[in-house]
Image (cartoon, rainbow, N blue to C red):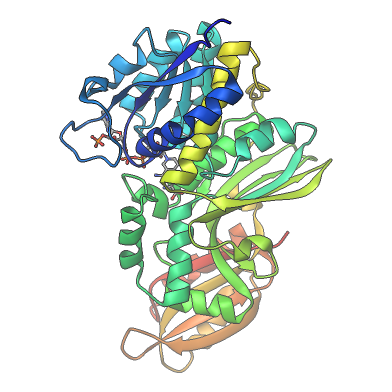
Length: 433
Ligand code: NAP
Ligand code: HSE
């Protein structure tokens, strides 16, 4: 009997995700090897700092500080890029693909910024690029969109795609804790990006939305063409108001395709989501995605969206697919061929809105607010007054009837011109589908 072939794996980056992959591959290797019919060897790994303590034990002879040496090592067939960012990670990815190697990546920022270049490099040189871990942690959403739902056109995809933000919003609401304290926990637990502003300002969600839009519609939407807002201005007042009115606040990515005009629209913003929706009840570090296809109807996916183990699960699934490809030539369905697609301007949003603003507590101010909204063509549905942190002031919380982005922006512009309005009002959208 012939010996099974050996597949050498190189891991660039042994941080939260890299160590998870090393740990779980070492644990599940025998089972995977028997299913895949090959021997898997963790051949080499790269780090930035050789002296840093690691939770996994890697022989010194297999560690380097040069990720390119791993990516271009002739013995390495599968390169896992788990460094992050768009600098060294891009060099490593392209160097491996140019040598016809297979790259497994968790790097949504890189894919969103350089997707066409990466896929072109893979195609040109016979390499392959797998990226299941780039969106929604352990949820196999890439496989679902690329393979399981291939029969469909997608009018609406929306979801919670950032574990850190969902963890922060959940604990703020449940425990009444401050934002900064919970963010520190999210970092300690390995959920947050090295630059956590990517999480809380909405950019990480935007990167993931860009990848889902590409898989669903074949078009790369740059983040500059998306509406992107984060969670940094959400307070207890907003969370309480939402709960009392039957909503949860979730940072949502919303990807819509209007089949009549063909327009595609990708946006990311904190949203008041009715508690009757499944995703309004997806909490902590969990992500949830609703995908509506014209053939299948609505499908929903829920699972851990960040952290070492969930992400390692997705990376190892890609490694298994890569092995099958290398060993038997079975390739998964390719990603769609990139195409141009008209992008809808933000003015297309129609929504009900929530506004929070601090105003001077004096006669006539409510009338000024009502006049400003009426002049902008926006109709108030509900208004309540709460104590303000400012002296001699009140916090107004209002919701509107359905309006549109132009009218609500005109309302905000009018508010800003009123001397009785203190600071910048907060605007959130209320989900309707
Ligand atoms: P991390 O903990 O910061 O680990 C990054 C690793 O890359 C570390 O081993 C670091 O070395 C190494 N590294 C960083 N900069 C480098 C450089 N300039 N040159 C060489 N090596 C460098 O990050 P992570 O959380 O594992 O994330 C890795 C990737 O997975 C990112 O693309 C991230 O967006 C993605 N991702 C993360 C999660 C998650 O839950 N954490 C989930 C899904 C996807 P040292 O250890 O020596 O510092
Ligand atoms: N920082 C990301 C998150 C990691 O919190 O969702 C998973 O992509």
